[in-house]
Length: 277
Image: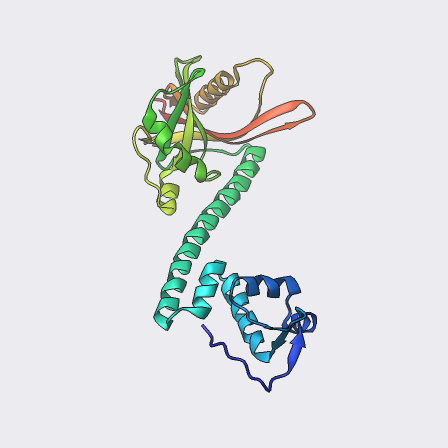
């Protein structure tokens, strides 16, 4: 990326003085010398001297280092590269950075969504609306993991996208009680598209349609049964609004908190409903 040559008439600087004037540490200079990138003049007594031309190499090392290139790539870029090879190296690094940037943007989106959700839970927001389709990956039923190897083949990909991906639950039952409860992971279809993530079977795309949607912070009782209590709460709220609920509840869990011995789960509950006749 830049030619290296030494001018015998140029002023020489001892390593400490040169490091200060170049804005780096002596450790930096010694490290890049060991890697074959910097070539100071070394006297018989071991003292190292640099001239003004070495400053351009220091700047080049910093430029390439800050772009995320490895020491090996820096050495090759300075000592053994054509212009085209340098361009190809930079293109490869750009591709990596673009991928990392996309991942960071999606994690930022997940963080922002979580903050909004917690505020809605605190306010107890609710509505009757048509919700977007959501991907659901089953994971446990009752107290056992689902025995399907296809789940565990893709599970790491789902976990990589948390907190955009959240814990999720499906509860089914009769009018009064939840009889079957499944835990898994949930991801809005729109969010999956933004991620460029395509869930595979046995993941299901749930079409909940029109639902009673309730954001709430629910105190977890000492005894088991929090999910059943949430299920009954949803059914009662639906009927109080003159709605006919389907015997199913879908919820996404945002987080758990504990303070002063009180444990809470913060979530959004969705029950498919229709108007009572």
